[in-house]
Image (cartoon, rainbow, N blue to C red):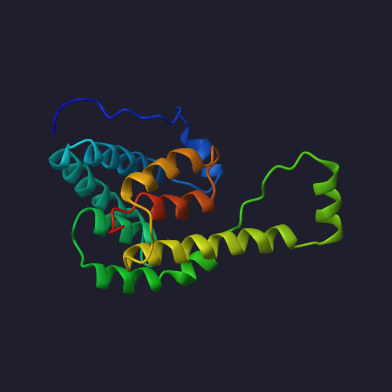
Length: 182
């Protein structure tokens, strides 16, 4: 490894805050390593990226039991599985995705408050639909059916990553930080 410190764009977060949000320190570290490895890979630092992905795989194996798709992302990025095996394993993670909690987004207008009152569960249904769509995007990426490149996914990650720690962010990281064909 280069010996340079890993640059982290995420502000310092207390372990207590992470735990209240349903996250572990390992999840945040995994995410940061994946992002830094992607940046290095795309910048020509392939050897350093591979080393980081090996470390992220160790974290994933210790903290993300199957069927967590972040484990699949780690295996793909560390080149420890074939695309076909990864796609099969990803498809098997659907129950994990279905168990995720769709995030409640802050809404400021009175329109949104009335909408939630008139249509209970509507926001949850929309959130569940977004999670399913994101899950399918990851599967498509593994099957080389998705049109985005790794560089595009990293840019999407930087722009779409929620500030808070929720289940959507877990799946978003698994999908957008995946170094798969595309």
